[in-house]
Picture 1: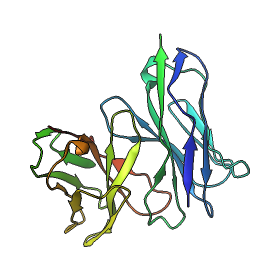
Picture 2 (picture 1 turned 90 degrees about the vertical axis):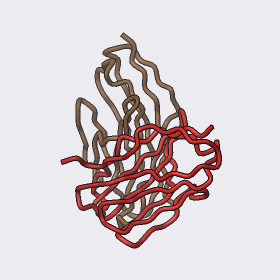
Picture 3 (picture 1 turned 45 degrees about the horizontal axis):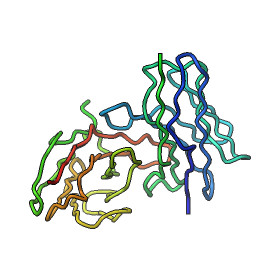
Picture 4 (picture 1 turned 120 degrees about the horizontal axis):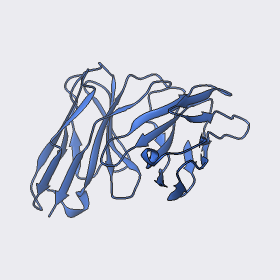
Length: 113
Length: 113
C-alpha cells in the first residue's frame, strides 16, 4: 500500500540555520504531495503542496519539490526562525482522491535563539 | 468562514462514561475524518466519511462510533470511556479531489480518569 516515510526527529537548530526535513513516499500512480504544520496546541494546517512531478510548492519561505525519480518531497527553508518551531507532517493523496490522506509520523522542529 | 469547528475544547471523563465529540464544517466538503493524536505521536485515523450516510473504519475504530446524517456534521461517539482513549482528537474535512487541501479543526483534548 501507499506510505510516507519522514526523517525521525526531533530536529534542533539555531536561528537562521538551514532546514531540511526528508520525506520519501511509496505510491501507485502519481499522488499529490503535501506538507502540513502543527504549531503547539493547534490543529494541522497546510504549509504547501505539489500536485505533479517537478512542481515546487512554497509558502512562508519553505519549499519542497515533487521528485518522481527519487519519490521524494523534502522540505527546505534557508533561514529558520524561532516561530518555525512546530511539528511537520508529510502526506500524500492517492489519485482517486476518495481514500484518506496518508501521513508520515511527523518531525518535531525546535529552533533556538 | 468558520472552517472546521469542534466542541468541546477540553473534557475530563470518568472510566465508563460516554460522550459525543462534535464536529461541523461549513465548506460543503464531502469528506470528513476523525483522528486521534497521542502525546508526541503522529495521527491515527479513527473513522471517515465520504458523504452523508456513508462512514468507514480507519486504523483505530474500536471503542468509537460515528454517524453522518448531514454534509456539515460528523459527530464521534465514545461509549464506555477507557484511559487508553486519553488523547487529542482532531476532525478534518476535504472536498474530495486528490489535489484538495484537508482542513483540520482545533482539536478536543480528552482525559479519561
